[in-house]
Length: 235
Image 1 (spheres, rainbow, N blue to C red):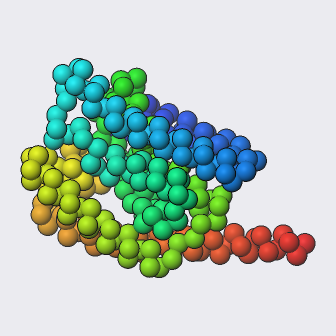
Image 2: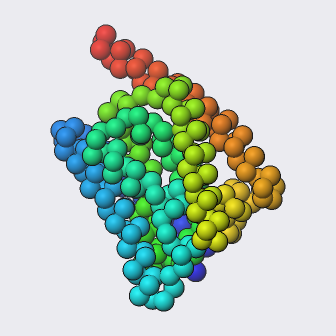
């Protein structure tokens, strides 16, 4: 069984950091179209790994409709990213950018994976959750895609719409996808919040505050990068 903040956890995060340090400069030497195709392939790989969980769990006799359908945020985002890189859709990317930074990143620091490597579900969990961060942040890092203040509010509205739809599915399936019916299992960020349903109100307020903070940090970093670039051009 996996244990958070164990040697395995830190090794996985460090290996991913090393991969990012290699991947981004390596991709920078390719054309933008080749970069798009590579990112699309990674999004497709993540999507396939999510779909493969269903037949694999059926094969092992552990499939549970209340847990194994890709309706958690980290599970359905790869499919959204396939669309983003098929169409090079900045608007959709801007909406899910905040979900990745605030939700998926938290899932890497306080993982809910049950099994240690190299169980197939552990491989799926880490591949999806880590690559989501890289693939979602890449356009901001390398392509100069910008965020607008309106993207914050569109992201909040879209998240509430998705939560409402998945909440309906939860009532039918008796599940807790997107954790709108209760806190996730184990020790996570959610553990410090009040119990359901009050914790949903806290989540809403926290998401709004953090999304605005992420937007502010994003603009500040972008402004700093532009200043450095203009200074280098003058020299």
